[in-house]
Length: 214
Image (cartoon, rainbow, N blue to C red; front, side, top):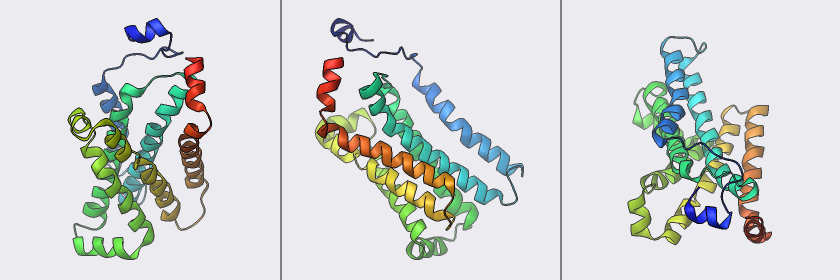
């Protein structure tokens, strides 16, 4: 807790351990390491490449959702995890990048023409690629230098594009199997709830309530 917050009593309600960010990155990449291990030792199923793509994409969506949950946790429960938000956000991008790389390299055999054809002709791939393209500038500008150069308001406005990225990611997840499966619908519902809260919060007097309870 900072000195200022201690004076005003506006610190987190629940104590959060001060974990070094490098440990967040290490822990966040462990699922990927495990998935690659299972895939390359032929322990992940009959179609290792498809299962690897699926697992990496699922973790990308989980981490994107986790990124969006950090602010509501602080606003509603005063659990302050803001210092880890950049790490979680970048981890989600790394998983999307690995998901895309596995698809291009292992699934499509680096046949870029075939990959481009799929992107243009298959809507669920088009949507997934759109989510990736949106995340690229967010990942590139996830550093203090970019915040200083862009200005806080412009930087924050740009990073609200993560709302579109996570919505497209959830839609991509639903469309992959071409049938209505429970798991993608559960994730889509969570995404809708988090986005609904994030978008509605400024219009419900939430900020005033947060200041009063702080």
